[in-house]
Image (cartoon, rainbow, N blue to C red; front, top):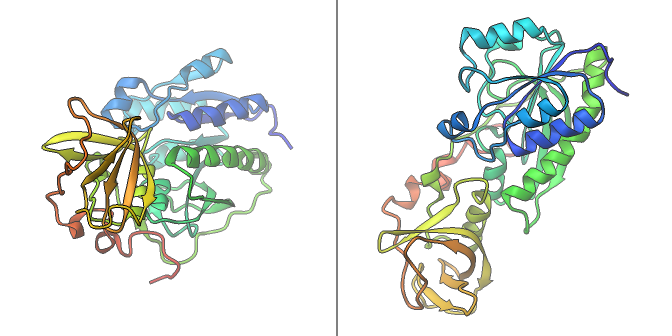
Length: 336
């Protein structure tokens, strides 16, 4: 089933996964009249992770391209653009701001977005649900296509699909999975929406919300367990700012670290480099074992056996990813 050729879609996005989904919709001849994206300067100013402009793809297919006055699209010129296009449907993907209600109302059938969590909406609304799912050591993710309303991820659910999170996933591979699944889901739901045959289901239950993560939240506390450190590193790796630590006030970025052994260097204080290999990979003691750091970089530092990374100045309970801090904010199985 394909959308009517006289339908009018506007696609809104500014990330590499959003670009991939747009290309799939184009390949299936979806009637996309205009693409809304942002330039690199606005992306940097708003700390957009995984940024990619959609302008090139749109121009190749003679689609109208619009760059809003601001990322939040609150300028009157932004509203004027959508009113002029007068679309049947908006498809929003990888846009890390709420879409103003006035813009949502310009589309005949409203706007589609997507969100999810380990237990499905309304659990885990808010920021960075994929990153949080890795940090929380979840083994699944329920992705939903939703009908956007002015709230944060609170719209009616149109379709939900599940995928697994394996021990080998990183934030990048989770985006691969989301992209493949979202392409299938949009190809299924868009024609039904435009034909008026798709039923919407209100979200049920008490919502929970993930807090916003900032680059400084990626600091490693080596006193934590090996699994916790592994999850943090893979959750904030590229295209995110990355996990990091300090050695004598020199920042060291840790892009890949994997569990190594719970039997080697069991008496070494947490944060101690217990081995450095000929590959420049090195082993660090954790609160309950060791991790192998496989990919790292620093401006003026090299690993030395016996040296020790600094302990974060903030108490563990003050960290945004501490259990005390985000209890009742993250996805949970109950409605408490």
